[in-house]
Image 1 (tube, one colour):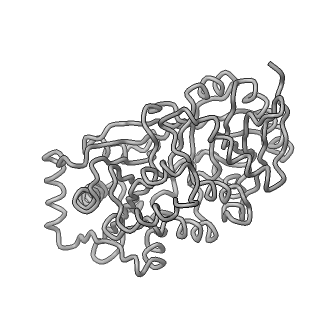
Image 2 (cartoon, helix red, strand yellow; image 1 turned 45 degrees about the vertical axis):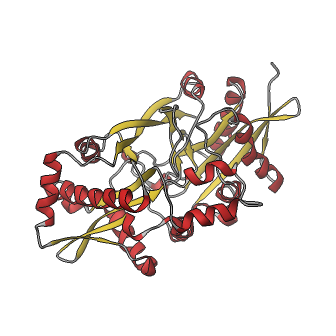
Length: 383
């Protein structure tokens, strides 16, 4: 088999080709969810993605015998390289992601091109796959190929793991998602903890008010930055990214699916839940035209879904070592569980991703009798 030719992406046409490739590689995979092509293009277009305000990236395409057979992104986050190395990134650490390849030879050639670019920028170590921000789709799927991912989670070919590990990349961190049947009530001990919190007049768990979207988002962001600041891989969202997230998530934000917990009127915890948008976009094959946009708008008016995903939850650091942390989490989870079943017809919940060493969140997931359904892995390699 001939060696592929690796070409840097420099034009709009090449970016479109970059986005189109997975549609061919995964066309026979029933568990791959075709992303909306416009959104995928926006993520790799600097003018349309606030992440590029503190990052730079080079995309590459692999060609063989006149056909596109692979793609990859090499990128450097200027905020990540200022981090404490104990939190995952740090000086001299670049990243790679958005990798797709027809075979191992193509993968090796793409990785070589990405490594060369990173070395040329002074990087000495690379983490990946991270596509492209840690807030988008980090990690390679290594368990859970047999069912589709939920909104904002990735999918991958099973063979990618062997290719990456044979190339000498070392596992550095695992991210897990948990699933549970939300039509079932929680175990008695959890219900007692929830009732105790409900009887405490100092504690209020409230819905957000979408009419005050920016104000509510600011409260959640403040808690998030405090709660997650010591987590592996944490990079604060910048104002351009916050604006992008608001535009992206506002259509699937519903008051009763996002909760803020207050103690004596002070916001101390939050939980965000999203109806699984993948259920709505899967039949569109990446296109909103000619009729996809109308179908999606109709769905967004009042989603009826099987699955709800919890992408983010946080409790202020000052409470994380106390029993209040788990109590607040259980109270928010229960409130959203009931709303998901009663108002949206959901029967399944998915929590995550959760870092493998986040003992608090893994314990909460276990306590409500959820189980790991997908595992994603981030690798490191020396350049």
